[in-house]
Image 1 (cartoon, rainbow, N blue to C red):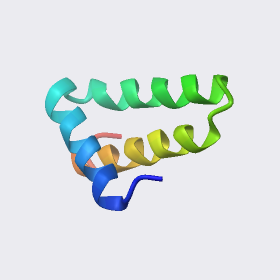
Image 2 (spheres, rainbow, N blue to C red):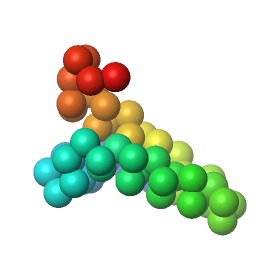
Image 3 (tube, rainbow, N blue to C red):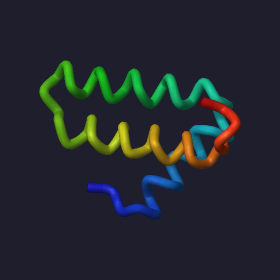
Image 4 (cartoon, one colour):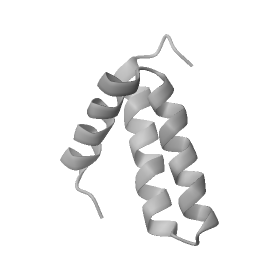
Length: 61
């Protein structure tokens, strides 16, 4: 499991690299993990998605 700091680091890096499309990319990765039965990895990607949503602020829902 990633630490909270690691989650936020990955989230920030993805936002810098992909803009707001990063949220969709992370969600797709979560779904792919679920499809392979990788529940823990999917949970981490969903946590990253949540972190990115917080980082982008309340005006983008």
